[in-house]
Length: 165
Image 1 (cartoon, rainbow, N blue to C red):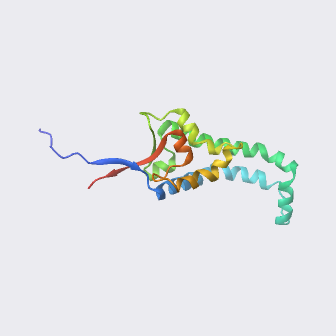
Image 2: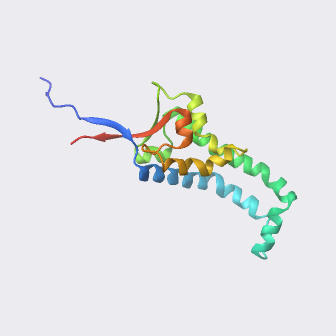
Image 3: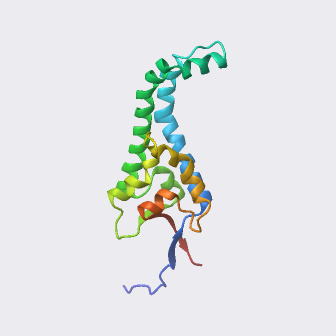
């Protein structure tokens, strides 16, 4: 039987749409909320007074409570870092990116571990990396290709495949 001589599908890779990136991030945060934040929430809230909001703020501002919270904050940050690092390192996409059909590429042929590390530094709970939580998304709004600051530093991009019709 002969092969059909059909034209190949014409596609190209380009920057991912901003709304898809935001949607992918919210999907990832929803998953992290289910598996990381909610389990820790019961531990943290059990040590806060239930009387008034002001009383809760006073307890949270105390050095005793901050010392108590620090290990949980570090554990949650580490789990978030590992989620993004391991999935992007292994598959070049997180679950949210996979659902939105977008993925990460490096300037070279393959995504390197150092590039994935630099991309996920914003989840490291140490100054100055924690400033990236604010600076990264804002920086994305001012670049043509919607790249975050950490993506420029890591020489990576979030892309999607477009089909020409």
